[in-house]
Length: 310
Image (cartoon, rainbow, N blue to C red; front, side, top):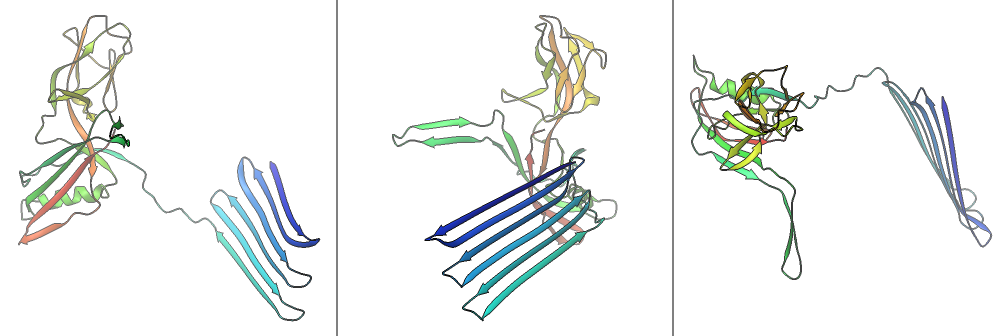
């Protein structure tokens, strides 16, 4: 149980006449480390000459107990001119939320569903590696550049020229249903780039030094080596010194892409692995435009996928 009360008063006196006064009072009661009640008051007065004056006051009370919320707010303003005319404004707001459940906001998820492979994919796929570089140009004409990413974020733009919904085919439902289940660009999923093999066989990860216990699972593209987004654990095979070793006694997979040994591989022993990997991506937009160009035949002229960091 803790109580806290704070009060602040400020007065400005001009030529011996009270000109302005501000007062703040705040009281807090904390029970069991949870804010239970907050009380605050603000009062401001302006006195001009001897008679006319303006006064404004605000008073608020908040009670927070688990999911019960009660709040009272009062604002009052007075304007007195000469001896008789006067104006008074007052507002009281009282709000109670009792056992009101919070909206069911979806939590951030990372599904391991694989983007469906459909026959209507049109060959004009735009694949874009994206880096982030900060560039500062100086008056001398020279530049200062800072690379903010060691590895690129990939982006794909593709289109489907034919999505059938005829009897025996449900390509439209499969693609649209997958998009709906991901809540647009909210959820992530796995994607195998059709222009790049996602199967690695006997890939060298490094040479044991007697100390290193973790080896990132990577891929090579045009000689550029980068970590893969997600490794299918059921496909992972590990070799140390050319001999296959088995999980969980010798190694384990730290999701999404790190091979871990409880005991470091022996110095000089080659560590290699075979595995199937995927990019982790999300949809680039929250909307998809399906065009019904013929009876039960559809097309999707633009679908964007964007890689996200695991």
